Image (tube, rainbow, N blue to C red):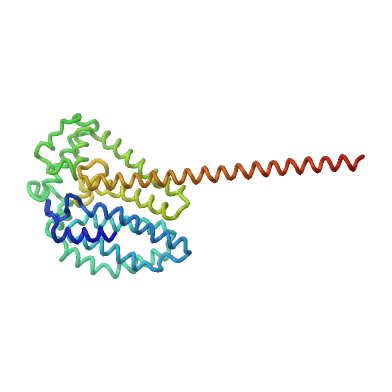
Length: 324
């Protein structure tokens, strides 16, 4: 994690600027790897709290400081989408850590009141003009269809022209120069144009299967650390998918969040593949634990049955001797 924070600092100093965002260094995007790092750190924190039977709130200042540091470094790139996603991942694991819901609601209300002035300051003075424009554009991108709303309008055209079944694989018109970056953030708009609503539903079904499977693995895992990691990975993949689809359909501001396993990007793909590998490892651990428990139960049943059989035979022989 220290190395990840160091790379985030290096990005702000020597990083490469692409599309108004200084997010790349040495050909990688450190913010993507910090998503997985956040899952591991947050999962470890709450796992230790459960093992030591301490309240979740105890020592949470260190975790909040860590998340705030990561958020600030990524926010300054600027990469608001990844920064908010990291906070969302941490909060999702926090909700599943056995926190008292009533206490959480009270503290959330108090925290919201205290943070509203800070949030207003961030929106007014800390967001770049590009970020402010992305937020305001979603309300009516057609007002400036050739300017700030150009990407979103062409995304709408791609999605609408695809219809139910699409134009056919490779027959997209919007990717031939009308829609910028069709292979990265707007890849799902192109897929919708070529494969239609059915194609998008098939891809979303695959993502949903991964998310549900990760939650099932978390449910079966008896180790708190593995449990929270599986939850975090499922939330990371699910949140990225929702934010990306929300961006291309105008429900959310465009944040540059890639679609998992589909959008072009080596850092994002590598992080997602590592996450799936960790999930498989947790799943194998669950199966081994289950088989070990099953084997022990069978052994106990075997010896109990043997003992019961010997006891019955002994009782029967004693009864025969006493009768004679």
